[in-house]
Image (cartoon, rainbow, N blue to C red):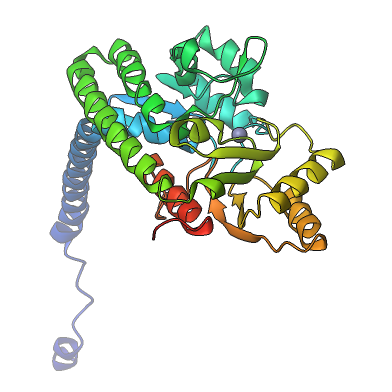
Amino acid sequence: MLFGLSKHPPRQPPPRLEIAILPQMAKASAVRLLRRMVWLAVLLAADSAAAMPPVRAVATTTIVADLVRQVGGERVAVDCLMAAGIDPHSYKATPRDADRLARADLVVSSGLHLEGKLSELLERLGRRVPSVAVADGLPREKLLPVADGVFDPHVWFDAALWSLCPALVAERLATVDPDGAAGYRKRAADYAATLLRLDHELRTRIASVPSDRRVLVTAHDAFRYFGRAYGIEVVGVQGTSTESEAGLSDINRLVDLVVTKRIPALFVETSVSDRNLTALREGARARGHEVALGGRLYSDSLGGPDGSAATLEAALRENVEAIVTGLGGER
Ligand code: ZN
């Protein structure tokens, strides 16, 4: 029995000490872990605060967003309302847009009523949020009138005229972020110089097109400043806003022009339907003149952020190469 008892010892009580210590240890390490997590969160927050640009700007179009990025550099986070390829004349704000605009440190629009359907919202916001409409700040004598007191808004197609806009943006940024003022002014001056060099380059390229072929036929009248600056006659099937409709008589008048001048190519725009240009090509074909589509031009929007035309500088260059090639200039 005794042997048997020793063989089968009574069940030992559980080691009380370990049981008492285990939760203690678990509690202590949980507290340590929690402390570490809090520190990590504090460090991450401090790090992201240091990396966060001090100014949050909301731009309406991709072209204006590019301008603000060029001038703002790393101090400005730019949020663009309209995606690439969107037509600003017909764009309507969503409730989310209104919220994005209301929370901005600075709202930058193109102006001269380019954003026709946003005008009221932008005007209302302008009383509460610092805002600037860049083209509205250009000297009136440099603008092309379309009606009494109304000006053509497509000013970015004249690189020299657009070179006056960086300074306007720099001054507005300086008022919302005085610590960055010197940097904004320096970047604006550098970017203006880049635009002036680009202006010279574009003029030289267009000059290589034989003079009797320097006619640019596009979907809407976005290129009048371009035409004036670079010496090319410009004809838009629709008016200066895509909101205006082209009538049959406009199409017939344009077919006449294309056939008589033997214009070799028409140009589609990335942000406008090519319905009218197709009608124009068919009209010319019926009269025995074959006219090509000379490529897609960036008009009121740049290309996508990862594409080859994400900046105005690149988009203007691509446009001019398409025009020079389509109209038979020097390659
Ligand atoms: Zn337009």
